[in-house]
Each structure stands twice: as structure tokens, then as C-alpha cells.
Image (tube, rainbow, N blue to C red; front, side, top):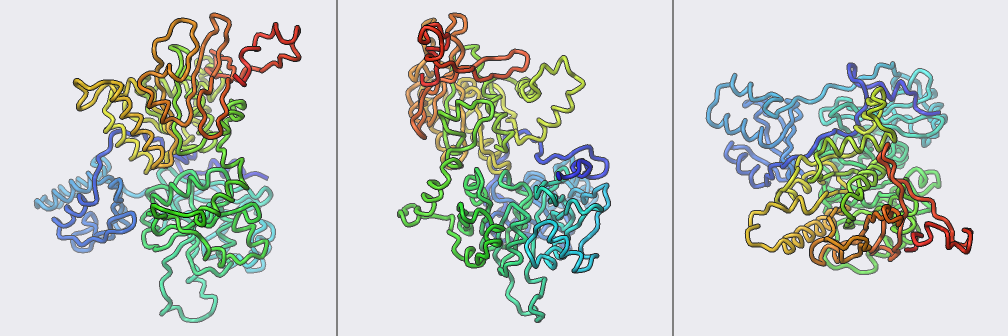
Length: 629
């Protein structure tokens, strides 16, 4: 039984739907440094603590006499205060502090504390229209019966009460509240009784955590006044895993993340600031190691550890069911911070994990291009792909469908469309998602627009020619805030037109610098970067190859994958995507394509076997276009 639709629609009163991802486009951010924060705080005579992810200080937005705790993100400058329940960007806070230092009147300072000036109040608590029953109002016998019905770990009764679990009137779904930094309900993790499926409900601009505190249970019936404060936490993505760990007797806080492996919002980083050790125990699935590396970089890898799941113990719940010692498994978690030199002993477990999960190592599979999976094996983070092709062949249209396929599977995507305006690109994406000409079906516009809005897809507010420095600032900011896994630059030639020192500089040399910067970004941030590059001018009818990519040889040398979209339909040669380079496994070849002008979608052309065609395949029109190239 699935989660009832009424619950999936039930969001904050007055809202019309659920938005898991905020559709914020990225403009050029200010790039503050930790020293900037410290300088302003020192000028305000405020003490501060340089933490793992935030600079902590006193908040003068609350009251000059009774300030609250202020957290300033060290990377983005995003600030939040629990007491006055305000948040915003560093530029707004700095302006307020400067005006306060100059002696601005109290009424004028209050005017600065407004959303118009970038200082926003916390969202209100999320309320559901459906009535729910709290488990702490039920008897232990009733709760234990629910534990059996939902296949939860035995002994979860006290844990369910502590985290504030609720159940609907039909006992078909159990609700676990996510609490924000100010301890209000930001959303729910919904567990279905029959299917075991977990669904997340979050309000607009809400984010929070489900946290289990073992010290609050007082299981030993002894006074905890002199108990040592817990400074370690275990992060999981499944509420069932959280319950299994909570009943295991571990002396760590158990935390369930709101967005699974897709995103770690910066709003919840202050809630994790006081832990000196953070251990990831994620379920064994595609993309967990990419997510763990990304999250640990955001949390400071020096305090991060990871439990490596395997085929025998894919999750904490499986370990619990197999009567494994979960505390012992946690103690064997490996540190994620590695030195510059390592040995095979440190790599052994990761190598074994890759060999035993070879299908997952290959990456995320495309749904609309099965033959592309046979050649490239899948989409992997940390790689650089170059896409080129003849003029008018449909490079941008192909890439929009390519990226849409991945975004529908949870890959956080950032588009840098320097050649085509964002609204035109969005129209193409919307038409491809719908699979039909929307201008003839405007009655269904909202249906598909809502679907596209929920996808983790973002767009740079940069169009036309921009300097490399400006583009890289946006990329680094977006990757940190939105956990971007796929960046698309369309096209490199349009982007590189302006440079601070462009006069007298060879354009091939400038393009090589751009390629090197994106190669470094992909590697350092474990993010897949796709560059769309126009080809050189070739003679009519000539097939494009590696040497056809515009610029020097650096683009094809640095790239892990080189794809060439070739259009020879006028000469009856067909339309196909040719893989010219594949560093992962070496497979190269062609994927014959067809294009539907109504849906703006490419479909994979059916491949005929020369043996089954008449005259030993001589009359087969695809004889020269088989996928083996």
C-alpha cells in the first residue's frame, strides 16, 4: 500500500504542493572569507569561535543587551540565529552591523531587519490537514503492536516516543517529524506499513533533522547529571536504519537526513556543528560514495568517518536483523580524511567494495539511451565529458534530454547556458518531459511544470560572454549549496569571449585554460562536467573525429569521454551519436538516433542485424551505422 495521496498533498495550510528543491537560479555570489567575518565581528567587539563549518558569535539582530547564538557559514556567508529566528546572506548582516556601529537609531535598524534587505524570518511550523495521533499518547502494548505491523526493530517503543512519531487514523502510515534548528516541525518522513516505502514531506524553505538522543531515555534509571556530553553522531538516510541504531545501545546521536543522498542543505549545518565525530552509515545504493564524499567535504572531512556497506550487510537494519553488533561495526568505521600518501591496506576495503558492486561503480544508467549504457556503462561523478557536433545537429537539445534523464534519477544538475536564454532552455526541457507539443496542450501545462519544478535542476544567471573567474565562482558556490553532481556548459566558445587579459592572447591558449579549470573542478569537487564545444570547419560530407573539436588538443586529452553528434540525414547517412573516447572502459562506437520534432526528443534507432537482412545485409540501411562503429 502506497502513501495516501492526501498526505502527499498535505502541506502547510495555504500551500498548493510539495517542493523538495528550491528553484533558485545562481547569479554571481559575493565570495566572503572567514577573515571578513572575523574582522567585522572584532570591530563590533564580539567574541567568536571558528568552528568546523561556521563561525559562531553573538547576534546583535536580537538585542544589544541579550544577544542570541549566531552561526555564519564559512563558505557562503549564510547566517542564522536561533533566538531571533532570522537568517540571510552575509552582505545583509554586515550592513546591519556597520549601521549599528555608526549609531543608527533603533527604529531605523528595525527597518533593516526585513526580507527586502535580505534578513528573513524563519518559516512557520509545518502543519498537516489530516489529523494524526501521537504515539506517546498510546500504551506500550499498542505501540509494540504497531512496531510489529510496520516491521520495525524490537524495542523501538521508547525511541518512537522520544522522536515524536505519529500515526494516521487508519494506521496505514507512520509519520516521523523533522525538526528545524529552532525545534519546530519542518516536515515528515512517512513510512508506509504495507510497502515499507519511505517518503519525505517538507514545506517550502523548510529543512530539519530527525534526531534520537540516547541520554534522554535514561534506560539505566540512574541520574545523568554528571554524564559526559555526547559529541558523536551517526548519519543515516532511512528512518528504519535510525531506529535499528537507536535500539543498539550506541552512545551517539542518531540522525536521519531529510533529502537522502541527494542533498545536504546548508540550513542544517549549524545543527551538526557541535559534533567532533560524524559517522556516515548509508544504505548500499548507487551514488552513496559520491554523496558521502560531497557531504564530508561540506562538514569538514577531518571529523568524518564512514561505515562501508557490503552485499552481506547493506544497511544498519539488515545488520540488526542478522544479530550483528552494530556498536562494533561503528567502531570500525574508516576515517574519510586521508593524507597525501596512502597504501593498498587503506584502499583494500574500497577496492573490494567496487569489485563486489561493479554495476553500481559503473554509474547511473540512462533510461532513454540504452545503447549508451552499453558503451559508456553509466554516468559517473568526477569525470569530464566533451560533446561536439555539426552545426544544427541538435547538441543543446540532446544535452537537455540527456541531463533531464539524469535529473529524474536524482542527479543535482546545474545548467550554464551561455548561448541560449534560460527560458528557451526551460521550454525545451518542459516539452521533452511532457513528450508532446505543449502549445497544443496548454491545459496540461501546470501538470508538467510542477513535475519539472520538483526536479533538482538549477540554472546560472549568466548568458553570453563571461570571464572564467566569474563562472568558477558561481560553480563553486552552487556545488557547495546545492550539492551539484552534474554541470553543463553550453557552449565554451560563447563563454570565453570576455577575459580580463584577452587582448593579444591566443584564443586557443584561453580555451586550454578553461578546459584545465573545469578538469580541476570536476576532480576536486567530484562533480561531472559536460562541455559543449563547437567543431572546427570541416569539408562537407566529412565525418567528424577527435581532431574536429575546436581549439587545441587539450580538450580531448583532458576529457574522460568525447561524444560527437553527427547528422548525415541529407546524404542518407543517418543521425547518430558517436563515442570517440571512453576512459572508463575503452568502449567506443555509434548510437543511431531518430529525432521527433513534436516532442523534441531523441530516440534510439532500432539496430538491424546484417545477418538477418536480405542479401547478407547488403540492403540494410543501418549496415554502416551499427553500434560497433
